[in-house]
Image (cartoon, rainbow, N blue to C red; front, side, top):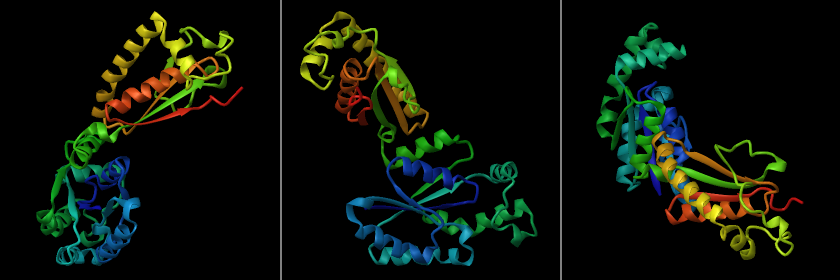
Length: 286
């Protein structure tokens, strides 16, 4: 089990970091008091395969309870509970501006007579020993949300493309374009097996239909350009920190051409070890 403890300065991006961790498969829990972390660790470990990647956030919002974090970390280490500590940081100027922009109250503002600048400095002093213990420190001062997501993916996946889940959907235009689609490809321009009597009641999952669709020169040309475009675009989406990509391929009824091309795309992505799924939305419709 991979167990990650996330902490850091208020306004440094812990919420966005947790969103990024969720997108790459972590089970995330927010605002856990330090003394409960070992218990949460054990519960996660007992869940075995269902919770193989776990992240918990603990921070100054816990008030006096947060002061026990270093003690908790020492106890977990002595009990051989393996974990990593991620600390989110940013410079004072950026933190102050983020609080001003969101008009949120700093958790330590009451300790500093309402002074935001003093609250930021006080929290930095309180958390300095924690930061020194961190396995990973990310300064978010100059990072956009997409860049932070990419940094998180790089740390815990190694390859940003592993964070992208690609959903391949076939559909029939007569039933409407999938609302969730990011990219839509219209293959109604390709030869239609529907008008071949022995293929009419089959689908693109059947070999005779696939062979018919793929034997034409226009299909071969389309497929070559189609896959080249997808291969070109995937790294661009990864670079933007996108976690979900829905590619929809449509024909008239969603039975023949779209199913054939969607299966081809799905297997092409699998061969590149990309995370992908396939759904033939309208294949059962008449």
